[in-house]
Image 1: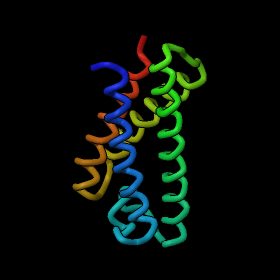
Image 2: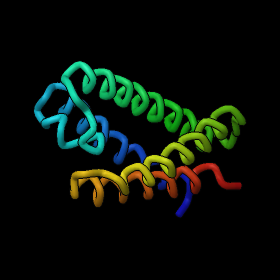
Image 3: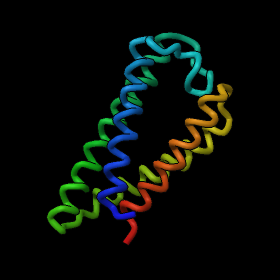
Length: 126
């Protein structure tokens, strides 16, 4: 798989995840079904979800810059370092999802974060 295809898949995944987190934030999806069932209040949920939404938007922006750089044949070490950090974040999140109380989060969350980790690795490998 080439880097541009991996980035396009990441755009789709992150866009879908962003919508999911917006639905949680607006309480269309009950917050007790996410975050491994460990949230105790609406205020706590809003804090976690706001952070998650901002992180997803940030990742999309970084990947957009990487996509443009690939098109021009240029590289940027800072962007590559950020994507390596994303890969590490997704790897740790995969481990965290293995301890989810919700079977949906266990299966779907683990799968999505593992795939995202692999895609980030593909995007930044030499």
